Image 1 (cartoon, rainbow, N blue to C red):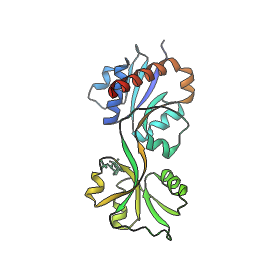
Image 2: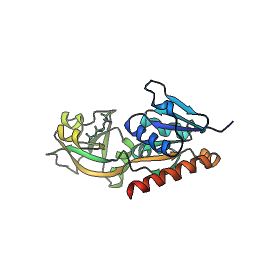
Image 3: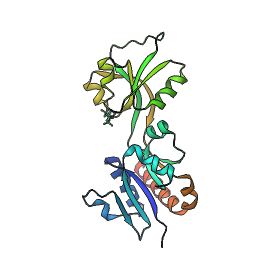
Image 4: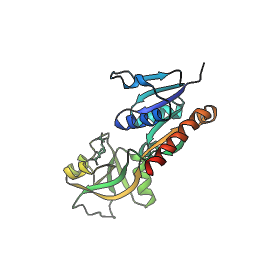
Length: 213
Ligand code: PRP
């Protein structure tokens, strides 16, 4: 029996783009395109099994070896620092991590800055690197509301098109880091399933080069 390679794909549009790359690499699994609520799909002949997981959970599956490889945003990797290998920048799912707030916000450096975010680790590291005292307010979503209601002075959040900020009369104050989707691997899997992983890695690298030509 063939060893199966387990791949955690982020549910959603990004995951569909990623699956297309795997398909092009010769690891298709046609049943994945059937419109149903199944979460696991496999092609035994090709030795591959895909599963759809919440984007922010991909790195957990990979770190624990429940998935051999997967695709996760750099934001998640920076936030949770999972013990995995980051194999490749896929150059998709691009956005940036930024500090944003009200347009008329004037920072008083004498005062502790109140920062609302989902990304507490990224925010703490960013402000620590500048020696700035902050209070973190951890939220789970709709972060943009915090400075509007005075819950925080600023937010640290993902900005993609900038529409959410604009429609809420907020603006980017500082850019922290560009974000994109990364191909990641479990450390033991990279050793023991290396041939399969390398085949996929090489093909995807080639696909990215062709895209750039
Ligand atoms: C993300 C992010 C911003 C928005 C940015 O939110 O937290 O709110 O997307 O995108 P834009 O610059 O294109 O407007 P998401 O949709 O993931 O929801 P949540 O953080 O509120 O849960």
